[in-house]
Image (cartoon, rainbow, N blue to C red; front, top):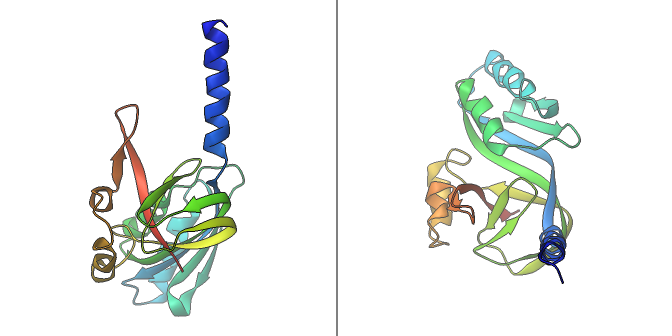
Amino acid sequence: MSMKKLIAIIGVFVLAVSVSGTAQEIKSVSVKASGLTCSMCSKAIFKALEKVPFVKSVDADIENSGYDLTFKPGEAVSLDALKDAVTDAGFSVAAMQVKADFTAAAVQNDAHIKGANYTFHFIQVKDTTLQGEQQLLILDKDFLPEKERKKYAAQTAMACFETGKMKNQAGGQDRIYHVTMN
């Protein structure tokens, strides 16, 4: 067997393994903001979120300082970009919940699941297999009040919980989003 054929076979195998059992796509996000004092504050966050390139729609819940977001099909979603839109408008994120589709994803406590454009680190969950749409709470710094976030810090010894990054095979850093299931 030639070296090219061997590399091609290995490549197909790796692709097949990496596609099965993963989080496939982030469908929607609900953001709760803090620091709002008036309707102009809500409007500032609304406009900031609308400007994020991959956002299709923003629905505001002014009474609860919440924003429900949907995304343009086929676009990569950056949770950091959404957080940055809120903070750049002068406010902070009090909570971010993500709805993502999973296909036979085996989830274990204190373990990572790789998606198309992100990696989720599951904390304080029971071992299970996720199928279909699931709701996750983001536990990272600036996505949750620090007091609440610290409750989850004791659940992992991995350094990525504090840094939000983990070394990849190429020697670079991958962004890791820490989540729990609600």
